[in-house]
Image 1 (cartoon, rainbow, N blue to C red):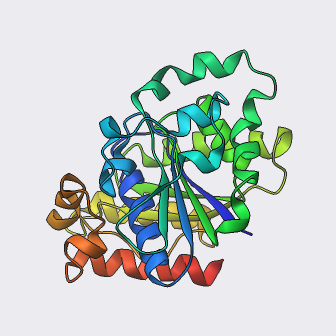
Image 2: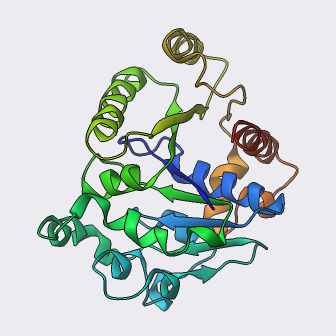
Length: 253
């Protein structure tokens, strides 16, 4: 039965989707069966593994509004053992539709119950907000990986997300935990980046991954080619560090 991990941060542009698809790809390459669920209306996880959303008329949106079964929305990728439930532009208005549905916070949890026996890991790429889609993802998950950019407001955003996680634990998912915190877009030449790492480690030492993801041109190029970094440039520094992170995730799990 799959371990379900949400990749969440309510701030955009922190490497959330990059982290989701690259961890998923490397774990799939390690001979584990992996499903990515793209719950972000922007759909970057879908395009980042080569899925053309315009050519695909079945998405997580259709699953959430109970238009189709979960199994019908699953799409193969070009990476062995890696499948995805794509996003769609309709997902942008889904929170309004879901708000009137019974059990609206656990619709995704119920949907994934139907397929979790097929996989070793399910990674949910959350939208950059703390709305109903993210609440659904956290309610459905065993744990959360938090990508954190080393910038001035990082701690404030982390505090808000931890408060939300604790609220979900109290009301909807008592076993939810923080799987880990990963620093992204790290630039060791700046004092601020080093200070942010030190400060977060003071409060979350056990949760922080040893692997730190640096700023890397090849990492930023890969999504536009519809490929995880493991395929686009496996010898790059970004690929090396995401491989290390994926192995760390496997060891912890």
